[in-house]
Image (cartoon, rainbow, N blue to C red):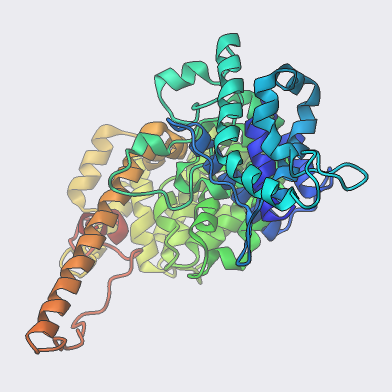
Length: 521
């Protein structure tokens, strides 16, 4: 379909006597029941759903409005023929149900501007106009469409409301709309963040029925399209698909473009969703995908996805530890790697053995103590994983912990990971695994968390815009009084830049990104 046909088709879908699910009307768009989805195909799904919502928002406004995409040429009025043909393709999907309206004089009047653009097998306009009069008739008919289609939409909407089957206005996450929910996609416009938009208006809502009816390809398109507003019900449905959806997630993770600085925001957020979903699905395929994601995220100290998963890896690997514990053990023992991925790997090994039973846990603690006491290993790594040994204080390793505390220099730029007082406190408390504090990374998809993020983005956008306006005013003032632009010397850093995965220089013993970096942000 070309864009005008598609716009008319989607309008016809929305004006239908009853709900038509995407699984039924998408094949008409593709002109094939089983399209092959490339990256461009997934992008197309997102844009089609965005157009669907744009049309729906206009028709569902008060008063209803329509902004059809007609072809335009300089020498003639708008050409609505393709748009009308698209509308009628949606019409035939529920042709029998349309009879209720078409048998009335009012319905015939409303449909006339559309039907006038169609022709019989002898190339005669269904309007009955002669060839001489046809251009004038079509011009008038195309202008009438703006007013008649909203009337058709509201006619069927009132019918649905009367029957208790209204499907309009249910994408907003409110108690009122949730009680009316039926099956409909509400796909938020891309980059819809703005300070004057309530965060609750940005939360898409899906029913279980419509999600069950979606293919894995359509579900994956939602992961990309909703960015960080993806609701929990989509994640839950992806979990039920199990290994059927894993190839889609794996392909996205394997695509180097999605990890680059030039990656689209939607693709970047989809990496987070892919990891989260792989963490919910047991089995070898998901374990392999999650291990690859772990390596891509933690092996690169500059990967900004690391912040989102720090502390949560044990929870993400929890249902597949029988497969992933050994690879994690190998990562932890690899002295050629940075301390950051190795310390997270240690946490995963401990968590996996903790779930396996007391004997396995004690064996893992002994293994960890061996790492902490191995002077051939990276000292910073030994200090960091000493914290994990401190989470399971055993008297047989108290002397080792005290030795590690003495080796650390609190006055150094990265401070000490732990000191004697921390050891005494740990032995007083007993076992206290640190990963328990990050046991549910899927809180990311709770409505309250989504709203909080949108409010934060809106505030940051407003501050950024304010700074830009202040800068422009300063530039304008300088130009007005003849001073020109103000020269600012290049800033030269006197000390080495602190990496996000370095120990925090405040001396807390935490990673910089988990301590003062967050305060700076």
